[in-house]
Image 1 (cartoon, rainbow, N blue to C red):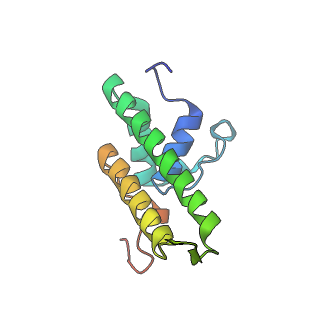
Image 2: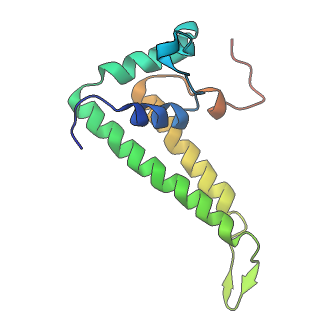
Amino acid sequence: MTDAVLTDEEKTEIRRFCGYAALGDAASGESSWRFFRNTGTLEWRLNTLAEAERKRMRYFLLTLGQMERAVLCASETLDTQVASVWTRNTRELSERVRLFDWWRRRLCGFLGIMPGPDLRDQASIVM
């Protein structure tokens, strides 16, 4: 993959991993990023990353994609408490999700943006 501009698919995954909602179709003139400061900052950053930063961003995407798949695979053994000498780690799913979210927050930190609504503590108030 070239280190040229990020593709729309890469930007979509970055938004999602950063906890932001879908933007909508920019061609319609109704995309939401113009109305929210944090989302606008994210879009500006995605469109102005240096070549080395895009390379690092693609590393984040690869890592987060693998971690997300690991969370999905962990659900395959949720029904097993003990199998022969193997005993399931009952905290596996929560530990994987916590690690996955930690990496997602690192991505936000790399971009210099606030984590999106999907990454915020539901009990917190953002002003």
